[in-house]
Length: 419
Image 1 (cartoon, one colour):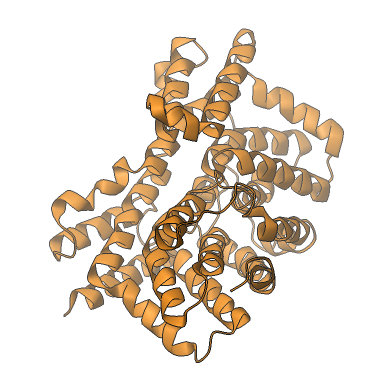
Image 2 (cartoon, rainbow, N blue to C red):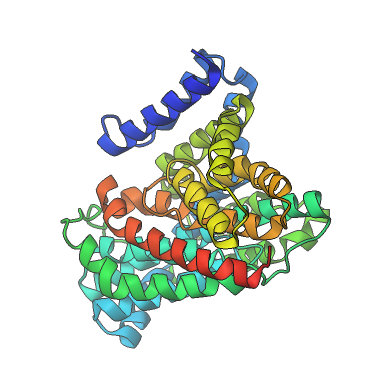
């Protein structure tokens, strides 16, 4: 069996395990990694690189920052304030949660936003008397779509920025991404408020285990908020601070250290706050993208796309890129999917003799709207177990949203970014 076939079999096997949940969520990525190593698809030294990836490390260290907000009573305080604004109306709460997540995700990591907001949303749900599962999935969707708005919101945007600069010697502007993604954000909020919540309600979502009685360290409330602000500011100015060694994971790590040093949380709370299933999922699935690129599986996909395009009609090309990238992004990290397909999009543009900018814009946004599975985007991974969801919950609510987002992108991108 060729390495391309082996890679595709491993991908298909991972999908079966995710859907059927025959093994615990965090074990499937380890099976993938073991398979890649044993079959020789990837060298052993490359199999574990996902755990040193910037996104994986950042996720790990953002969990204690979110825990500090909970332990010091910030989540409880804000939860009560949100109830005063939105009341106990489920529709208004969903809209407010998604808009807040989208705005924050536009200017800092959507992954970090989800981790920090998750315990807050649980508190809001408890105060409002609604299921946490009703609000956590809208939180993930809001963060995923909000990250599409700017260059720094999500890793795929930075990846296509680099690909465009290398291929054409030009770059996207900081807010260029929002020119086509802002309507997608609006569509996602309206959809979840009036349609998505009803689809989610068809399943009885399990609540997380009841919260223990906590003695909040309210005297540390200001300190935990200050740490959060420092982390957010650090992430926002990451491009300028990189000269001093302050990358996104380092900023998150410093924030995590400060939560313990300042007494916001204990070391025991630090370690127990980390959701290892999420970390294993992110670190374990990224090497699969490298395997697809190395074995030629990604080029195989590009060949299918190219053969489907008889002439460079902007809407047809955009639609095929969005559909292909979006489908691949459902079953692997959006960062990995974008990395795999960026050179493919450049190659397609060169073969068709068109501007690579619209193809790359379609690529990064398509992987960010790949919300129909719990493994497509980091925000989905983070809320998967905390909200008590099943795989089918993401399919029911995410497939219609993906279709709406794909149609919006297909219609707008050729108008905003001419071929």
